[in-house]
Image (cartoon, helix red, strand yellow):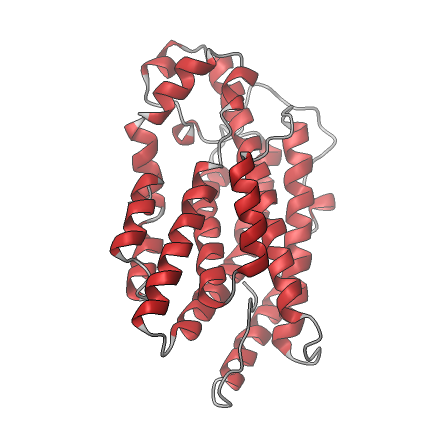
Length: 305
């Protein structure tokens, strides 16, 4: 990620920060994609494919999943993939605004400034790519619930430093693990696999910077600051993860919505998938002092621990 709510760094830290930013810029020049050209937007949707790896479905492993026809299972994964993409757009828009706010009127010759604009360009392309992908999957516009939208509006306006970076990292890490599975899965419709591959490759640079910025911002931070930001990040994580699959996907897949929601909420397989995907993230947050007792409550509610 880019610098969010940046403060004045010590002179000795600047060369390292600039070096990292320059390496990311170089990497971006070497390995970036244009979704307009790379993704097959023209071929009609082949409904013999899933939209995501079935094992990542919120109903996989439930009695309802066992009763569903293969066609219903594929349609559900397509709707769920579209919902995840829509949630990705929501958070990427939050990120873009935080980055622009941070770099307003700063030194444009600084590699970090140029990396910030590069990342905004990446996220903008990703959002358009996700939007077109969701439309091609035959899904409506899935949006987070009103409370999440309003909290996101507040977060993008106020979050700074490690709170912003760590929250960004949570969103990207969860998406990264599931999308790595989807992009390799031949059961998933080819154009979705391409979308996931593009996102995984380009977001890897963003995650690297987010981790380094989180560590740097926390240097010298006191206990109260760590406790506060740990809680803020965990609450953000809860709303991000709980917003990924909109409950309307079940009705749109032709299922009994009430039963599907009930079984999805108690689906231990899906909870285990989320916990597994976040093992590395939780280790990082713990090492950074951001996995406090209060924060753990929200991570457990989000099934990340």
